Length: 413
Picture 1 (cartoon, helix red, strand yellow):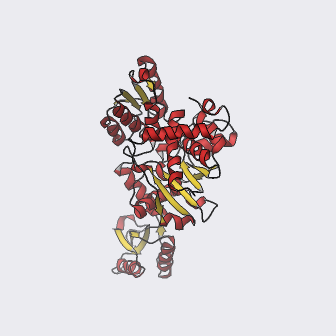
Picture 2: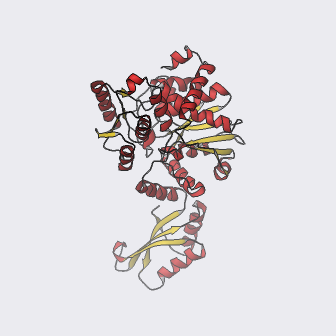
Picture 3: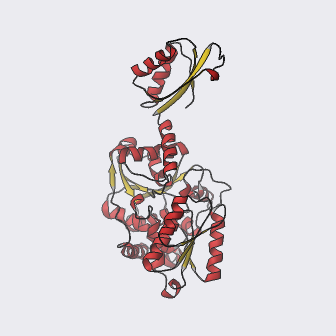
C-alpha cells in the first residue's frame, strides 16, 4: 500500500490515524511498553522539559520490531506460507526474525560482512536463517531481492513500505497518548521510515506538534534530498552511527517528510559521543550511536520552556564500541586530559607536577616517565600524564598553573 492509495494524494488524517491505530492493536501483545522518562539533566542542558522515549528497551533492542511485525502480520496467508526474506545490518534483521518466529513463518536474513557479530548471533537466536553476503548493505539488499524472486518469498523492506511506516508511527501515537501537551518530537533519520511514521501519526492527531528529524553531519541523506526537492543518493557516508548510515532515503518516506516534517538538525560525531556518555552517566541507559542522535540535537533547539520528546531509537551496541565511545565522549566533555612535558632529569620534578595536579583536584590515572622520548634524552625526561578532570574550564586552570610554575606542556587530548 502506498501513501497516495491511503490518502488519495491529500492528507487524510482519519484514514492514516485508523491505519496507525490498527498497527497499535497488532503490536499490543508483541512489544514492550516504553513509557516516557523525564530527564532533569537534558532539560537543564537545553532549557526545555525533555522526555525520553526509550525504544532501546524493546525486546529486540530497537523500534524496528514495530514496523517489521506490522508488515508481516498484515500479509495474506498465501504469502506467509511461502516465507519472507529481508536484508539488514542489524536492527531490522532482529525485528523481522522475531516477528517471523512469533507468527510461525519461515524467514531468511541477508547481512553484509561488516555486521557486528552480536547482531548476527541475536538474529540467529530469533530463529532466522542468516546469509552473510557482500561488503556493504546494498550488496545484501540485492542478494535478498534475488532470493525473493527465486524462492517466492516476500521481501520485507526496512523502511520504504506503508505498513512498516505505520508500525513505526505507533511511537508517535503513544507519545501523544502519554503527553498530550508535547510541543516537539525529535526523531533520528536513516532511511526515513521512523520519522515518516511518527510524523504521519502526530500530524493526524495534532498538526501543531512539530516533528524534527536528526541526522549525522556525515550522513545527511534526508536533508540533502529535501534541500534539492528530490531523492538524492550520497556518494559516501562518514559516521559512527551505523544504524542511520543510509545513502538514499525511501521515496515514500521522502514524500511524507516533505509534507509533515518541520525541520532537520544535523549533529557532529563529537556531539553524538557526548550524548552517549551523558545518557549512560545520567540515566544508566545504554543506546547505540544512532539511538542518541536526538539527545545530541537538544542544544541546537531554538525554543525554550517547551515539552520535548527525544526518541531513543535503539540500544544494540557491543561492549568494545561502548568503551571506545565513552572514552571519546569523556575527552570531548573535558573529563579526561592528557599532556606531555619535558622535565630536567633531576630528582623532585615529578613530585612538583603531581603536587600541582593534586592541589587542583585532578585525579592522575596514568603516568609515563620516559627518558628516551625527550628531545634531549641525556639531560631531560619526557613525562606523559593522563588525568581525570571536571571539564574544559578545569583543564584551562591546570594548564595556566603549570605554565605559571615554569612547565611548558604539549596537550595530547
